[in-house]
Structure formats: C-alpha cells, structure tokens
Length: 222
Ligand SMILES: C[S@@+](CC[C@H](N)C(=O)[O-])C[C@H]1O[C@@H](n2cnc3c(N)ncnc32)[C@H](O)[C@@H]1O
Image 1 (tube, rainbow, N blue to C red):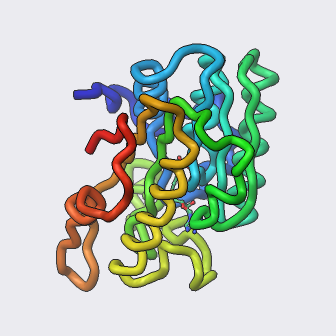
Image 2 (image 1 turned 45 degrees about the horizontal axis):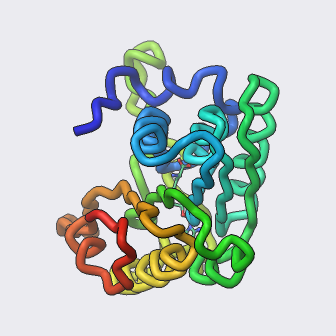
C-alpha cells in the first residue's frame, strides 16, 4: 500500500509545477510517482512515461536524480511537461529530462535507441473522454454553484481518451508492448488506473488492463 493522499493534489503541486499544469484533466498524484520511483529505481536510472501528460513522472524522477523520458500525444500537454522539467531544473533537480511529442503506440521505434535500458516505466492511461477536471465548490467561490472546468483532454478524436474502451485497451496494450522492449532485465512496469463510467455503466478499466495481451518481461507486476 502506498500512502500518497495525505495532502490534496494542489498542495502537492504548489511551487513544484507550473500553474497552467492544473488545466490537465487527469494528472497522477506527485506522491504516487515519487514513491514508485523510490521503490523501483536508483539514482542515475532511466524512467519512462509513454503517456506523460504534464510530466508528473518525469518531474518526480529528475528531482530524485533519475533520468526521465516521456511521450505525449497532445502538443500542448507535451509543452507543459517540458515547462515543468525546466522548472524542476531551476529548483535543483539533477536528473536529465526530455519530452517527445507523438503517439506512444510507436514508442518502441520512437525511442529505439533506449531499447533494454529503462529501470522503470510508470504511466497512466486515460480513463474516458471526460473527467471531473477542476471543481470549484461553494466554499471556494463564496457560496456560488459548483463549477467544473478542464474536464477534457482535447477535441482530437485520435487521442486514446476519445476512443471506445476496447480500442483504448488495445492501444494501451500496444504501448505496454513497446515499453517492454525498452526495459532492462529486471525492469518494472507500473500502471496507475481506475474504473470510470460510460452512460452510467461502470467500466472496469483496471481489470481489463491486467488482462491486456503483452509479453511478460521479468519485472512486469500486475
Ligand atoms: C491519465 S493522462 C496521464 C497524466 C500524467 N500521468 C500526468 O500526471 O500528467 C493520459 C495521457 O495520455 C495521453 N494520450 C492519449 N493517447 C495517447 C497516445 N496514443 N500516445 C501518447 N499519449 C497519449 C493523453 O493526452 C493524456 O495526457
């Protein structure tokens, strides 16, 4: 069990991530990334996130002296991730970080130079086209209505967030397969994922991800 929710997301990010990062609809809690990186890697190791969003995995890795490479499909999120890595460097992060804009279903060819070198792949698939995003309650806005914003990734239908669940799961399987080729012997793939609802029906995305077809490298833990 990882104890990672002792502080809310905005507290964990304050000063460590650019304010515009908050516009991403489904970020990983920094404490989750930090604890997984501590548990499975050593300083100088390489960490990869093929769906890096605003770069939480990358930022937490470089702050711990690990090197990090991410891929992200949406150009504006890739730019935010690069901005967060620059910010981390100004705060003394010693690892080298890089973001590549592209479709991670091609991660094995895009990052072919890194085959067999990564200690850890830490990532999170999108769970549905919309999320709760940022919520402003009456407590925040002086008693007004509940206000939701930043609940969508983009309007690009090719983003896996917008694909039917079967296609999302198959695409994520392709991404894991590509990532498996980047792992060094004993390397680990860690995935954070949760269920979501489509038209009121619960979609067991964690259950589907566990059974997704991909080769089992020695360190794959589900
Ligand atoms: C749950 S979010 C990951 C958030 C990230 N962990 C963070 O903390 O910012 C999933 C990300 O996958 C991206 N994505 C969707 N399809 C993709 C693809 N084919 N290749 C790469 N990234 C993709 C989405 O744009 C989204 O930013």
